[in-house]
Length: 168
Length: 89
Image (cartoon, rainbow over all chains, first blue to last red; front, top):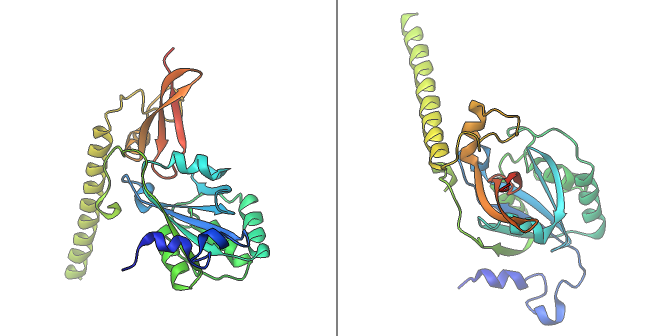
């Protein structure tokens, strides 16, 4: 039976003690659970460069850059599913550089949280198409075989408020 | 021609009903958050607009400690980032 914790060890060759992140190349794309009734009801997506390093999150207030630990704590009101991508050094550097200089105004339909990630990956030759929703980009990354491991970030505190039917 | 107009009219009415239902549900969700009208002034410009009222359905609240004081921090469900922080005087 598949256990989600087994996914943690895929990249390290199923031997996390001897081969934990042997190249330090992992990049995490976290798909956060939706909530509320507005644009948040379609979820959110953030990028963790060098797992547990720096998180890039694009939203209505622009690109936020902060430590992944601090960002995950702020999002502890909901579950997140981190898809670990095994990028090369140059691909990761290109993605990080692109996200760092991203200044295009946010638009929920045409330039949302998933857009800079897709465009950043495209800089490295990874074409994910035009995925409008965070979860559709996550599914696309899985379908393309780019995901080497999955880490679940369970909620650390109870959520408040109600959610739209499509956000549950 | 009359049939086309009636179909067009039905589509327009259906759109109004869907939008109206969405706004009604969102209003109830905003009210159920339990925020005061003054608290929903998310941009701190001194007045709460209708759009700020609707935005309340996408904003949660958590307790944080700022300079040793227990404060209420409002945060966006979208990305978890703080919208504003209210501390007791």
